[in-house]
Amino acid sequence: MGTYPRTLFRLLGYAPVMLGLATALTVVARAAPDDKPAAPSKAPLTVEQPAGQMPDAYKLNMLIRTTLIALNQANQTGNYSVLRDLGTPQFQSLNSDARLAEIFAALRNRKLDLSPLLFFDPKLIREPALLPGGLLRLTGYIPTDPKRILFDLGFERIGNDWRLSAIVIDVQPLKSVPPASDLQSKAASEKKSAPAKAGAPAPPAKP
Image (tube, rainbow, N blue to C red; front, side):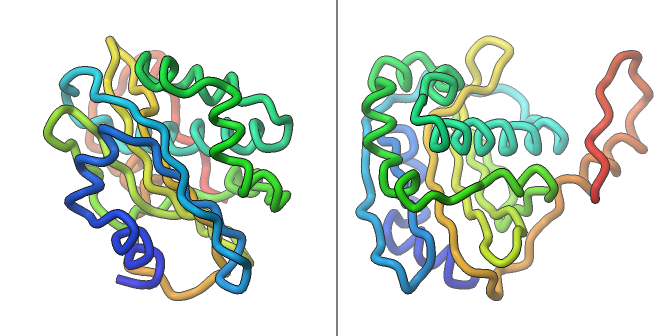
């Protein structure tokens, strides 16, 4: 499975994460294995409501990108209000801007720029999962070089929107990783097989 999933699942465990993502925001922020690891930080939150149908590949791609871009901008500016606004109501009530700044301090202090993710498509190391209670879990990485951006994200459906409920972020040097599914390819395949829809946005071109 590779170092990344073993690290995450050793810290959290796959089954506990299913429950833990519904009860705690967990962040793992490391620049590289030779750096001193940052201690995991937690902020409690709860499940909002049952989710509906699994989003398509294009929507999953956008959820990942939007979240990581918001996190990067927050780390660069020290203003976590936009990242917080992407969260569920419980996420927002339990995690102030100041609390999020504290949680992400280790990642922010390493001065890591995550903006290269704009030029790469997210890769999933597990199939997208809708967990009991309505939690959508997306686990994978952005294939940047020389370091990869690793993520484990949880979302809950609030009305017509998917809102952030949990996040695990890690940055590690390029290395062997498990086979990954390409959300961009899936989105293109779904578009070819589905009827054309007026006004439907096209997925971004792969560089």
